[in-house]
Picture (tube, chains in turn orange, blue):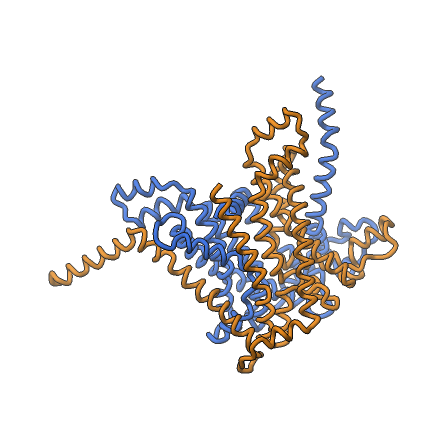
Amino acid sequence: MDTTSRLETRSTSAFISRLFHKDSSLGYILLGPAFVFLAVMMAYPFVYAVYLSFTDKQIGAPATFTGLENYSKLLSTSLFSKTVVNSFVYTAFALILKFCGGLTLATMLNRQFIGQRVVKAMLLLPWIMPTVFSTMIWSWIFHPTFSIVNEVLVNKLGLLAQPIPFLRDERWAMASLIFVNVWRGVPFFGITFLAAIQSVNTEIIEASKIDGASRWASFWRITFPAILPVVIIVMLISTIGTLGDFDLPFLLTHGGPNDATTLFSLTAYTLSMSSGFIGLGAAVTMTMFPLLILLVIASLISVRKQQQD
Amino acid sequence: MNTARFARNVRRSVPFYLLLGAVIVIFLFPFYWGLITSLKFEVDIYDFSGNFLVPKRPSLENYATLFKTPRYFIWFWNTLFVSTVTTVASVIVSVMAGFAIARLRFRGAALAGTLVFITYLAPKNFLFVPLAQILKDWGLLGGLPALMVTYPTNLIPFCTWLLSGYFANVPREPEECAMVDGASRVGAIVRITLPMALPGIITAAIFSFTASWNELLYSIAFVSGDQNKMLTNGVIGAFAGGDYFSWGPLMAAATISSLPVAMLYLLFTDRFVSGITSGATKG
């Protein structure tokens, strides 16, 4: 090997090690894979979804541009208006109940009691369990004729004269769906709220108790305002997840009875995958978008605030 | 006097323990009900006479039925394979990106952090319609690679966000000392900083693995053919298809499929909770 090429290799390796040494170049190198992946698999599909929503694309057929036709079609169908109403009812009730349940669970776990560690670990199970399988257990518990809940309430205890039509009645089906979502979500809310409560300065709470404040008052005046930023972030993130929920309505109610429990993702799935109207399905997901932007902006603001404190 | 105080404490705690008991029953009864249903013969499943909380003739028949399902083990391997590949890939990419966002100073670092957070917030089911088209354009629709390239869309944003929070709290001095002692930048990061961030990396890996293990929509929408199914849609298709549900094998599948995930979490609960909450409270 002659000297020039040896010099060249040395300078290339020096160049590479400089590249990996400087913050600026190393930063771009390390971010590269994530950035390329998210651009190809999230940004591009998003633009593609916008495009598809303006076409009459069907499975196995070429797409032609049809402007806003999909959106006007959606607005005139009862399936879509039901989807919007269902999604709002589902999200609003589930979030309120997860908030109340999570706060109750957190204050309970904040006490010292026998077997606390085991109970804490076990109560996380509903959140940890694969949704698909825990939902199968719930559809067995809500079985039209062999529901164990109805068996206990009607036959064993005699509290009810008629069995509850959990998944067959439109309102009961929505209530059951919300219940399972809350059952799954409360452990996560509880554990997150608990961690926030335990990081609150206990001296102030003790001082307020000495000053004669009741437990209730000191919780709402001192602890709750202190954990509010965490509560808001968890609620916002959960709102987005609940609004986009697919697994629960797909498995538990199939969106029925009479489309009473179909949500955005399931309607989009039914229209695009089952019926083949891909443009229409894309339009359904796009209608979620304005609301999502608002929720994302709210989350960004609250995280920013939290980081500044 | 001490005994009097003790008695008073006990009396005061009674409502608390009653409430705690009720909470435990509501949250855990479904698992118990699933488990004992899985241990019953088909005829006993619908028989609630006597003490319905204990199976009258416990049997493992439903588990045998499940394992004899022609493709059960293929679905199991598919799930294990896809979950492992996506977890390893997502965690490596996220460690790199999370480190860059949290520790390096360069133009656009803050913007990158915000963009990652936004992609994390996007609901995971939001993009399946265009993704199906894109996979079809690329000729990937139908097989397992379709899942391997799409699962990370849900994993990388969360893991990057979680890990950047972790890296921000790992002290910088050890890495700088190693470099003073002659280690290269990358060597110092890999040998000094990464081991210190290991709890965060493990949390990200557990999250990724279980999220892939539990995924449903993509495996229904992007994969075709019985031999390409995952455990989730495979079991549902085999036992919950159409009007007839085989509750015994379904409950057996629910119990068996949840075990690995539950074990993983019980081993790492504390670590996981602190990881999740630091992820939820820090950016």
